[in-house]
Image (tube, rainbow, N blue to C red; front, side, top):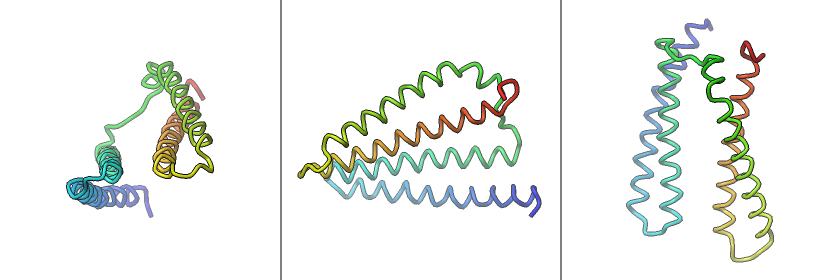
Length: 146
């Protein structure tokens, strides 16, 4: 498969995927409307916002392949890197708080909902840590940083 064919396939996949994410947004909206339970509503709203973010990422992928107008330069990263480093420290602190909270309830009965929500928070904070670490990897491989 040529580069052009791969790009066309990804653009087509992003279009299909965006439709699926839109269906997810609508589906979770129906769940929120149908429940009075705050836990179920919260989970549906979390998924709904994630789907909205996924659509934005898919749109950026699509437009970057269709117009080549999307770029990331060393200057772009350099201008904000100190702020990103400070945010990395914040994310590490939230991961530690989530782990500490989970450890505190380990083996305790009657805290299954809190454990479920804390595990979600830990997973999400670790995801933030990972995407920032991956951004740092990109930075390290760019001139003049690499």
